[in-house]
Length: 174
Image 1: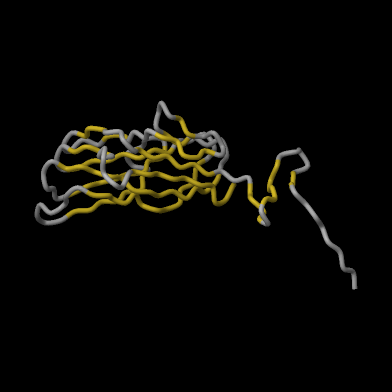
Image 2: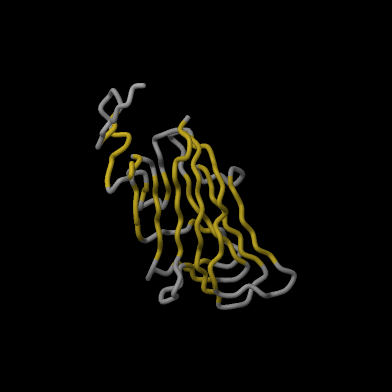
């Protein structure tokens, strides 16, 4: 029987890139994770017009892939990315539908869609889910969120107790 102990604070690749660090008894991966939010910012959306969601705050961006001026996640690492979140909407009128799209490269056909629709006006102020799904990005593609609703509305709703968030994390590099 060979019994040994390996003590490590940092694991690096042969190229010198840090892969894991050790802190407080846990190994912490050096992983791609980005989360943006909007609190105390309002964004006006016109009725039946799809608009790119503008995010006011970068909460964490471990890879430096968030483009704040373009409101898009722009990773340089190819792989499968998990995303999701919620958008807060302030609707001046009761509506029948809200549509949220997560788009690769802004494409109208290459999108994950979440749509809430009713037969009668019943949707009011609240938080609406961004689909949680995975999508493959080739290392030069972008990811952004857009929203459309039946009536004029205000996204992010300054002063509401809940706010909009969007997250993206690399789950499998290719």
